[in-house]
Length: 518
Image 1: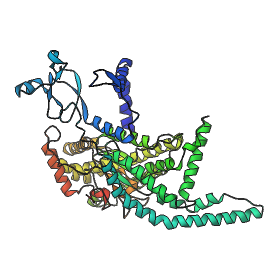
Image 2: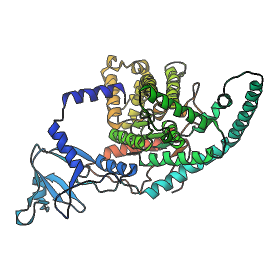
Image 3: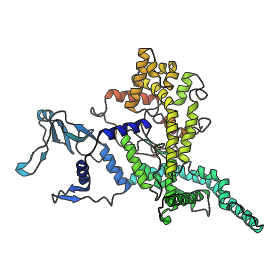
């Protein structure tokens, strides 16, 4: 979350308060529900719900929006569930109204003007459940997308791990010789680790993306699957640099707790949980159009990867809100402007890449490291913001903002320095304002700038940049054009944009994804 969003949230919480009574009533509704057979309130049993089931509930909640009745509304009996519409419309169409109460005392359900109520995008009062993806489908997709990529990567690393074992034995022989001479030095394990530290970095060099993650159902499965396969691989070696790192992590967590006067059971800090934490921080990426879904996905992943004694991992660098279908391309703008952007305006892109890599490499096992991750991310975010503005204006041309790309070439420096309001030509200034408005409403998502470490190293663009595997829900149904969901003009613009900019092309670069085997 950027500083602007944090400030807006803080102002909202300062201005709007929830009374104790309202909070108590809300907690009571979450704790008890009406038993349809007994017709009384009973306690809700949450203990049997797993992370994925909680995620499915969250996704159902995301379907709903808070409304204020502009006039008297009627609750109508629909085909699958109840729907809400103006009473006048329901009366004119002679639609059957839902009832409340029982027997002769039952009366039509109405919502008075000014009353607050919930409904989903289809004007329904209850979720349809269509958001839920069965576990066996999730497992199948993850196994068949992530599995082959991970297997190939691990097999390629096997010789390096064997060499690390040999190095450790050589270091043990060296330490024994020093001991006989009455001398001492660093432990053989530390020496072997320092010589093979790059092997550990390569081990976690896996990038798995869900471009429409919802509450993180697929990502939770991906974390579990990757961790299990990595664990199986590591058990084939008597010693390796990855387990050495996990041991150091365990010691650091224990030391941090001891400094706070807290005693924890070291037996619960098993390698599996510590490994899962590394996988989450370094290997998992997610995008969703709904900002609330992003936050819920983080909660699901935190619950799944909880580590006793360690703070929650910083995930803002890999969990982003945006429209994964719409984004600019750095090379396209670079070529169009006919100038060396990397040596000039875009020099900050490579430094931001380094900062993002730093965020990913931090293990976040102490509060201090989480703070360091936050600081590095904010610096990277600020460094990338000017170039996001440039791409915002550039692709706004595809969505009715005529002349926007010409404005980019004319006012490049003003856009980068956030001085669009100082542009003297009223028409050009209006184009820039329209571009930024479109970016906010459509949530433009520039893949190379959101995840620069995926596409760049510290000196140039990677030849094989992109994600290693892409997971998510396949398109089970044909997209529906619903007047209350999406205007035909918006849909036409999106289709024209996608014809010229293939789906996810800059992000995936031909890498394996869940559509390859359907």
